[in-house]
Length: 106
Image 1: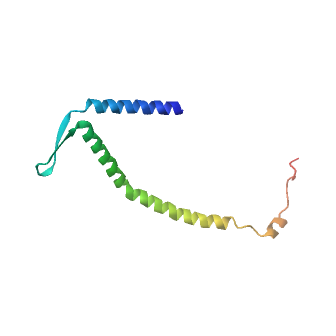
Image 2 (image 1 turned 30 degrees about the horizontal axis):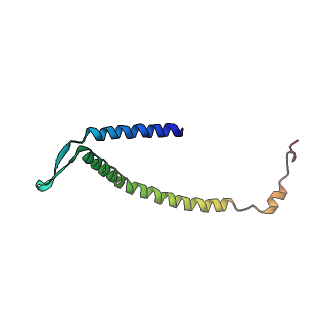
């Protein structure tokens, strides 16, 4: 499995490297107020990909925080319920119940 994982990583790297080599032509990005940015196409693609990833994480951040807060609240309530459930019963209850099967399993 480890060899397959490394093989897939190598294939992905080679595909992305080929993409980078095929997109070395300079492009001009026209920004606001007449500003221009000239850079190779692959650099522009990588910057746009990174910005998309950052914006995606920021968009999901409120949902992640809400789930973490709910999980912490549930974990706190479950630990109280588990503590109550683990309290031992009174020893007199065990003495009153008869054993209806053989103890040694025969």
